[in-house]
Each structure stands twice: as C-alpha cells, then as structure tokens.
Image (tube, rainbow, N blue to C red; front, side, top):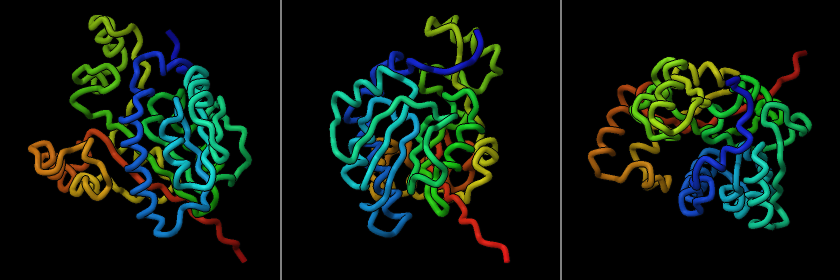
Length: 255
C-alpha cells in the first residue's frame, strides 16, 4: 500500500467528535497563545490546519476575530459546517500541503497533532510558513516518535520500530494493515521547524499544568506529574509530546 492522503481519518474512532476532550485542548491553546502574545487576541485571524470536526475551531472563535478550519476529511468538515455556524467561523475542505490562501494571510496558525498524518511534513510546514504573516505565530503540538505507547492504535512501541515492522505489528494486532502515521524524534521535529523561531512551552506546561488548564495531560501532584516534570527538566528529548510556539521571523529591508 502506497502512503498517500488520509481522507477519512475521522472514521477511525470518535476522538475527533469528543466535544469535552477537544475543548480541553482548545482551552490550553488559548491560554498559551494569550500568554505568549501578551496582548488582546480578539483582533487576530486564525487558521486551524487539520481541524477535523470543528470543535476546537468553535472554541477558538470565542476569543479570536476570525477562525478558518481546513481538513481534507470531507465527513469531518461536513459535521463542522452542520453543527457550528457563526459569523466569524469558516470551514473548508482543503489540502494542508497546497493551501489556496494567499501568502501572509493569517496572524495565527494552529497545527496540533497533524504533521504525522500528512504525506510530507516538510511541505506542510513550508505552506504554514507561507500563509502566516511576518511575525505571526504557530501553535505547534506534536508527538514524539520515542513514545512507549502509540496513541492512535494504543500499541506499545509502534512508532519506535522500523516502518516495515510497524505494518506487520499493526496487522498482527488486528487493528489495521498499514501504519500510516510517521512520527519524528525531538531532533527531527526541531529540524522540521528550523525556519521558525522556537519557543518551547512543553516544560512550563508540564511543571504547572493548572496555569494552562492542562490537567487532562498530567494531574498535578500525581506520580505521572512528578515523572513528567523530571523528564521536562532533564531529558526533554524523551517526553512523549511537545507544545511549541513557532514565530515567523519578520523580513527586514536590506539597504
């Protein structure tokens, strides 16, 4: 099977339609972006790349001026259009690797758990860079290839083993025949976003989840919280997922 597009990712489970779970992620996005930008965000335009069923987009539209959600999944976009109708909210079927928008269109781009699903993560990030205004901001949430449990299929070490073996592993588990997702390591992710200025919010969030309404990730005071805090401080490369702010550098005129 050739790796192409994931046109029907929303058919793989109900996570994309879980309102409570998706809204929790959206709340953290707003907390992080509001803190980083340090100003009124109500005038800003947002593009959510791979927004799926529109739940996150609807929440973001309560705080930002205009929110556009795109996804190649027609079923998910149809659900979003039917269930979330607001004047400042737009949903469109769109290819994240070949977006129709003009360059320097959006103030903020959301790219949350998307890079591993597209055919070319490099092309995705190049397109995000293009449509983002100079000085604009990307909220980038990404999984680490070096994770004990692969979340899409709930299989230990699925993302770690070589690709040919992952297909066999998935088939033997009875959960599929082709492992589409391609995760990168911490260093691979840094290389992927090298055209942006990177501000890492992973450590602050793990150390103080209440501040960012991220208790759904780690419960404060729990053993998991203590372990996550240790990893964030000393071995960030082994943390299973990251939340980064990426800033598009402004272009300066050369005299």
